[in-house]
Length: 234
Image (cartoon, rainbow, N blue to C red; front, side):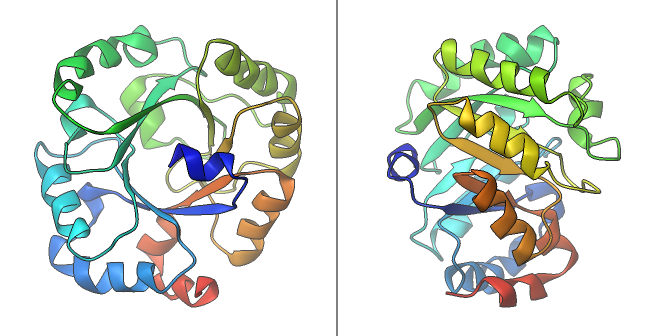
């Protein structure tokens, strides 16, 4: 995954939340993903039942050759069945559990896997509603008006050695991360930028790319209306 981002390709990840997805729909849904411009499949959620991620990832892998990357809300979502893992540190918040605590818990689960582990600075951006990430992590998002704070937080992630920065408006966001934020953050980074949350149309997808996003993540749009796949066919 990391190598493809550094090639400066514009990438698209479809996010599947095991807690909101029926396993019996996997073949049909993944067929639509395969027919789209999607380059990756992300799997994860803020609250997921134990073993649900492993079962879903294993099933997804039987229907696609796209890389399946874990986007975990907790260590219980780590499975060796996937190809990679975003090792997320919630640097927009100050809860030590999500800055380093959960990562220490994860080490024993990662020892015997071949997962590509990618240290990722995770920045939650205000999006017009309280998100599951806020509730679970007990942290507050950064206001979209605080562009300097967002930019400095992203740059701090790079200086700490993180390999990706993820600007997240959150699941079900009322509006996505603004073009101005994406553009400013990208101009100050030398590492790839992921943007997700609140993107519900091809125009919003293209706007994120034009502003500087290297990889865009879309999840809720497909949960609400799979017809969105018609806009992003190959």
